[in-house]
Image 1: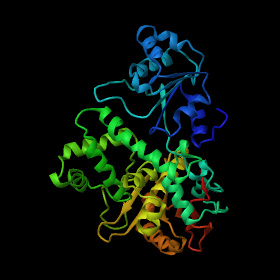
Image 2: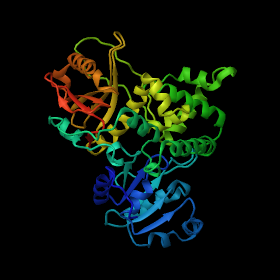
Image 3: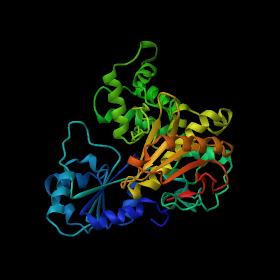
Image 4: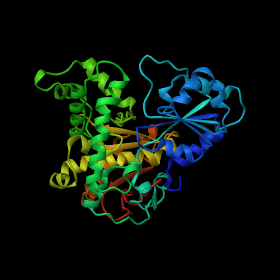
Length: 417
């Protein structure tokens, strides 16, 4: 494909293919998994639409596996036995990077597959970041910040209105050149398919009306701790809350489709007996899903900047996940339940280094955000957990700089991997 736009995950894919016989690329529907995989493939089988390939898989699978490698098996979960066949084929060869599996969901509940440990690498893809869509310069490297570097680099110059428009459109490759009106229609159809086809297709007892109400409720509670009891009440409506087991079933379905990504609570060593929140904070995999579920656009967000700030936080979490993934970084949330003091995210690296992150749509709020980060860092037992590698305020503003107190202020439109 000549119109392919490079992704942060491309380099990770190359490393995985060099190390393992097969790579499983997963992620929500329409994030560009197939488009990324075919850039390095010589053979492609689309298992959701290729009836001949599915038939060959049942009677003579060796015909598929004799195709030129690397081979992409797109939407492999439509033919679940492929997983074990790929695992076996890897065992039978010494070469690396032979097979690529792509998929938008886990197999149905009753399908069992063996572990691919040591044979099949797993690589997560998410919607495109502002850097990947060309709306961030990427001049301020997250990796460099975590290594102690200064935030030096210009923003792309997006206004708050333009930034909120990008939030509503989202990071979907199909919407790269779309306006907000076209994007709203696309996203409405995307969610309708999720509600009517994708979630019910994962198993029984998944009511489309309930799922629609759940998505709206999640849209209203974005960037907040998950409260299953409140969600169950919203979903049940006038009929009363739905059963907790049903509620967990719905949430499990959305996680299996990789549409929501809760941020777990961080539990570091503290200087005092501070009680920390244990519940996860909810975010959609892309902020556009939250606004689409609520039926709101840029105009409505401008009328409620508090809500806009929460959806902007989801956008920042999406981009941080993508930029941090090659580093092995994970995100967590932190809140002192006794005082209510919280910060938006803690980014933790495999070697134990960590960074505190606050997100503010308006750059004028950077001072308060920096104070919050410094206060939080002072409560961590740094003798046991280490000093922060960085304290970062991510804004919707224009300027990148390091404050005299050491806190870095970075516009999301300047941030990159």
